[in-house]
Image (tube, rainbow, N blue to C red; front, side):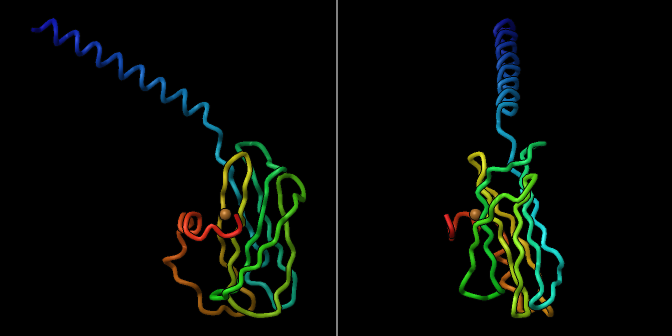
Length: 152
Ligand SMILES: [Cu+2]
């Protein structure tokens, strides 16, 4: 009886060791996440003056220069969302300059597809004085990803 127990323990320990090393190997082989750093400058901006939007796309230490980037921009509560395809500017940066004829609270989502991954950070920004923001409940980025599938 005791022998059987020792035998089972040995098998158990071995299988734990094997499954752990498998997991580690998988983690090493997984491609690194595509990272998107989205900036809006200046924020707040002024009416009819250019605002610079930049998405910096990286994967680990790599600058990603072949990403498909779409900026989705809209004024809070607006039905119409403007979508602009952005060409690579330099060093993994995708840049757009744009001015706005109306004050208020705005949003931008940068939809980035690269290396079989999709990342879409969202940012709020203001032109002049803010208007009523959209529901905070809708802020979850996973929501936008699965639910409305816009632009894909
Ligand atoms: Cu997206």
